[in-house]
Length: 172
Image (cartoon, helix red, strand yellow):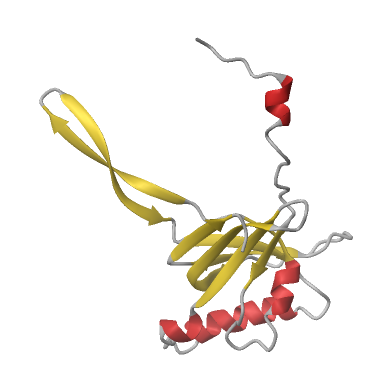
């Protein structure tokens, strides 16, 4: 029998999470004096996604699918605003150079340039409801710095590589 939700059912759902209530924490960035300022400049990002590989097994004339390995995309991005001193862009470029300098091509070991970050999502009462710990994080690319004849704030995207993202729910 079909179930039709009532107004009381909709009211019982609770408050929605608002997309603007998040904080990205990267405790230290190689070569940067203060990584806290990155947290204040992130204007958009996403919780890293995950997928389960599909394992097909054919038996007779039937095909059955089973759950395979759980994987991560391995890439993640954040969009940042820049301030007059362009320090954020400089910090990201230095981080990229520490991992693999352009001129010499000789890089560093991963334990030197990879970091662990935490993406926190808050509810309307400022209680953390989702914490995503992102390990093995380092920048892959830094988007072009677009300049134009307008009053727009300069924004750019940073593409990161990561190994794993572990989420917890309900706050700390």
